[in-house]
Amino acid sequence: MIVTLIVVCEVGFWVLLAAGLSARYLLGKPKLGMALLLCEPLLEVLLLLVTAVDLKNGAEPSWRHGLAAIYIGYTVGHGHRTVKWLDGHAAHRLGGGPPPRKPPQYGMERARHEGQIWLGSVVAASVATGLLLAAVWYVGDAGDTSKLEASIAGVWRVVGIHGLITLSYVVWPRKAPGNDASAVAARDPQDVPDALVRGPREDEEQVR
Image (tube, rainbow, N blue to C red; front, top):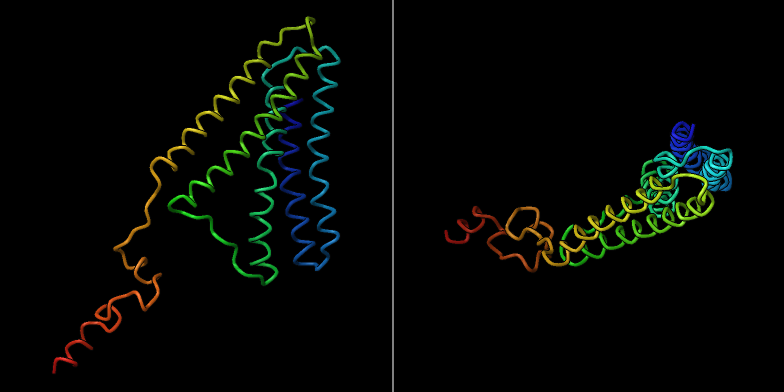
């Protein structure tokens, strides 16, 4: 039942998101769109309540309850980023707004961007840990909580791996290509040598 509810919440998340963005940009009703988007947290509350009732009714704690806590944590830590990203694309494609700004690709700006995403993972893991610890306390000595505790360890293991990947962008920052045509085109024309701006044919005409 818990796994089914998680699937329902995930589908409901995307349905409400699509409905909210459509009402906001296609129907021209921003208040209705905002109301639909604000309904999304109710899905997580519903999942939390059903999980608690399931444990209260004597269900043995299992990986399914851990998955529910992880899902809620992920929504808290990264859900706003997903909504913001999709809202920017919807505003551009449906509302005639400017194209959304692409994330940085090189240097310390890319490292800071990855760091912000990692902080979202820390928030997600913290929320999931809090819910799992509450479940362990709720069950107490009446049942086996080892799988819930294993879920906590697994969550922080993933966060640790994500942190190492993020740190690699600080230690070995990606460098922008400096010799390809796209990099030359992106520079200020005043910084490009005259030979590249004029082209070989104009150079030959000046020699003649």
